[in-house]
Length: 307
Figure 1 (cartoon, rainbow, N blue to C red):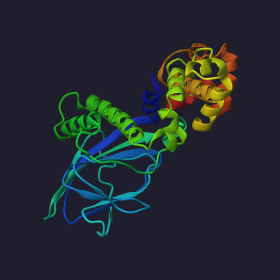
Figure 2: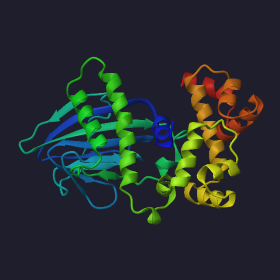
Figure 3: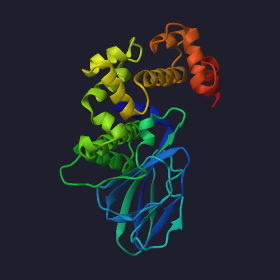
Figure 4: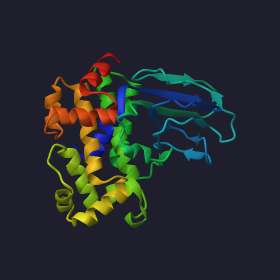
């Protein structure tokens, strides 16, 4: 898979939750932080205000998408000055649910979705994201994201046979489209830094995709530099400056987390996993794996099997 696909595939664990929630003014709700989670809020009808833990309130309109990758507390309200009432609405809703809170004023309908994260295997790109990503529903912008939102809202509002599978797939799509849209809306490449700059840089982006598509290949700094179309030294400097670690250190990390995923999700032997992620022997893979995860591959597999 390419890098962004891998980020989405690796970041979520367990069963996602989502709910279609309706409020009628006046209302104000405080959502507490949920450790090891990330969430979306999508305005389907009406308007409201996002009250972040820091900074000014953000006005939200129909079609706006808010992604919060770090599970911090936040509030939603019909008025930024409205007192917020603690609420868990939607937090234990399961895969899809609907809830309504009746008042006498204008109605706001929000699609609220959440992911559980395994912080041991999330990609470092996640920690590089801001606490709140707001993607306004600008006419003509991000059509794939808008289509995913409409499909997700329809499935949750009217569940039918197969909705469980459809909603889970659409949540992954929504995550991917949000990341795409976020990086597409950043400043000009010359002013970017970190992972945003790495993805925007054609040479480094090409190398990251190559590593993710074929981690078992016998990559060297020189061969990666050739893939980037750069000299060995120039490539190593640029990659390290943007990604935050040298090319082979990132390659090693990705091989090991890919191996951990295979141990969790397949019946392949440890020796087979070692070969698939580019290690010449089960012994070498086991030593590297234990340095990264603190346990040997076999013990890791047994531990996650009973978790």
